Length: 425
Image (cartoon, rainbow, N blue to C red; front, side, top):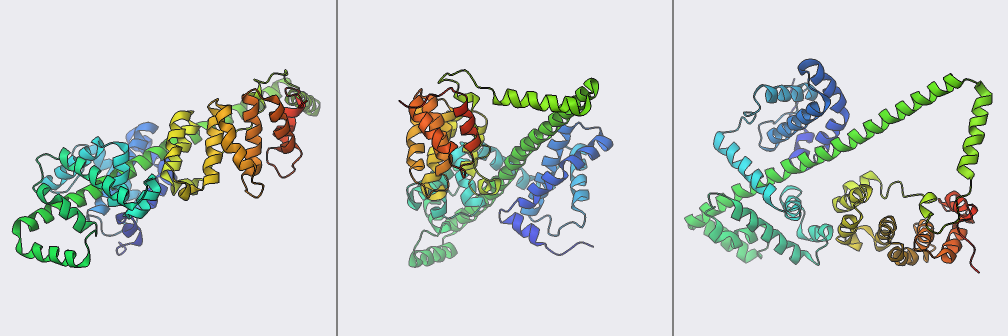
C-alpha cells in the first residue's frame, strides 16, 4: 500500500538529492545485470538508462506528479527505464506546452557559462542567501553576489524566445522576489499587484520563469552528480579488476615456480633488497623518493565545498594550472588560510615549480602547533630538492626523519639513506 507523502520526497523538492545519488551508487550494478538480462544492454548503455530514469523520477517529484513514495522504488525505477526504451521521445507526461517550455528553459540554462550555472543553481535551487553565495564563490560581499546573480539572470532572460513580457518590470520584480525591498516598499508593491494589471501579469510570468529555472537547475545538478559518480564507480571497478588480474598472475607464477616457503623467502629478500637499494646521487631524482598526498580532503568535506572538489579533481587529473586557478577562487574563510597554503604548495610542487612551492609550505612549516606543519615540512624538503637546493632539502628531510610523529618519517629516511642528497657544509 503506498505510503503518505514521504520525507524523502520533501527533501528532493527542496534540493537534497542524496536519496537518488545513494540509490544510483547502491543499485547501478544490480540494474546493469537486470538491463543485460531483460534488454541485452551493455554496461555503459545500462548506466546511462538508469541515470535518465532517475532524472525522470526527480522530475515527477519536482512537478508534483509523484506525491507518494512508491512501495518498491527499484521496481518503479525499472518501469521508468522500460518506458524510456519503449518511447524515448515521449517520456514526459506533462501537458505539451509545459513540457516544451521546461525543455527550452533547460536548453537555455546549458548555454550559460559554468559560473552562471553554478550561481543560479545556488540561489534558485539550493536556496542560498547572498551571504552564503559570496563565501562559496569568493565574492567580496553579498552585494557583489546579488549583482552577479542579477547579471546571470538577465543573460538567461535574453536567451528566451519569444521574449518575456516581464522584462520592462524585471528590476522591481527581482528586488521584490529577492526580499531586497524594505517593509513599506514591499507593502506598496503588493498593493500595486492588486490594481496594476500589467504589473500583475508580469509578476505571474516572472514567477513561472523562476519556477522553470528552479527545475532546470535541479535537473542539471542531478545529471552532473550522477555523471561524476558514474566515472568514479567506473574507476573503482577498473581498479578492482586490475587488482584481481594481478593477484591471479601472481598466484599462477608462484604455482609455476613452486618452491614453497623457500621461494617465498627468497622473493621477500629480493624485494627487500630492491626497495632499499640506494639511488644514484642526483638532485633531480626527487620523484623516486617522493610520497604524494593520497587524498587532500575527506569525501564528506568535499561534498560541502564544490569549488574545492573541482580543484582537487583537476589536481588528481594532472591539470595543475587549472587546479591552481580554481583554488585561487576559494575564500580563506571557507577552508582556512593554512589549508589553502598547504594545497597551493603541494600543487605547485607537483607541477614542477618547486621554487614557488617553498613560500606557502615554509610559512606553514614554521607553525609547530598547526596539524599540517609536519606534512608541510616534508613537502618543503622535496620542493628544495626539486629546485636543486640540496642543503636546505637535506636539513628539512633530516628533521622529518627524526620526528616519530611525522607521517612521512619512513619516506624521508629512505631519501636520506639513498645518498642522493649531501649534508650541508
